[in-house]
Length: 130
Figure (cartoon, rainbow, N blue to C red):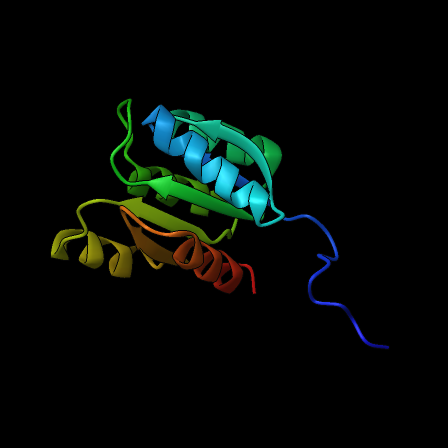
């Protein structure tokens, strides 16, 4: 049996965590154009934790700097206590501190540096969902 790779077997569910509304909407539209189901878009680490535990998505795309008291990395550490889920961090500033924290937290993660293009997003998402 030959599978057609252009037709997804099932739509993967993604949550976008981004506190800048225009960027969040852009990411949502890009993901939907690639055939993914964006289950929700939230703007804080606290809401990310709530929604991830409720929806149980296949992937999280999360900004590091967010509204609220919990940033993206801290939210990911809390989420990891309940489930293993890949995370793609999006950030405009990726420094050694963030790299070190990610390595020490043992999270399943990748990064996209803002601004990013559609091909970069597609590659990172496909790789994270393998």
